[in-house]
Length: 123
Image 1 (cartoon, rainbow, N blue to C red):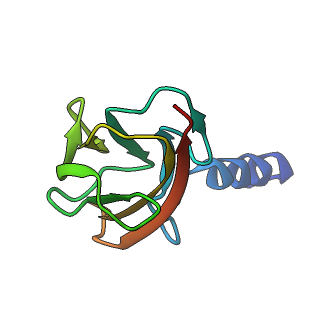
Image 2: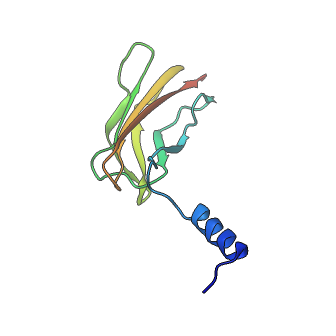
C-alpha cells in the first residue's frame, strides 16, 4: 500500500488528537468556594474537583484562619460519590480570610500534587 500526503496528514492528525499520559499531571480543576472569592455567606464545606481520580485515602485538605487556627472538621473524603472530588466540612466561619492547602496522590500513578488558595468571608 502506497501512502500519499493525505494518508500521512490523517495519521498525524489522529496522533496529535490521541490522549497522552506522558507528562500529564493531576491538577485542581475547580473549587467551592473558588480561589480568591469573596463570600457574604460562609461555606459549610470545601469541595475540590481534580482532573483525575485521587488515590483513596491520600487526599488532605487543611483550612486555616488568619492566625493559623485550623477550621476544618475531620478528614477530607470523597464527595458526591466521585473519585475525582474531595470535600471537608468546616466549623462555622466568622468574617475573615481563610487559606486552603491541599495535597493528593493521583490514582493513575501515585504522583503527589499539592496547592493552595484563599477565600474571604465578609459576613
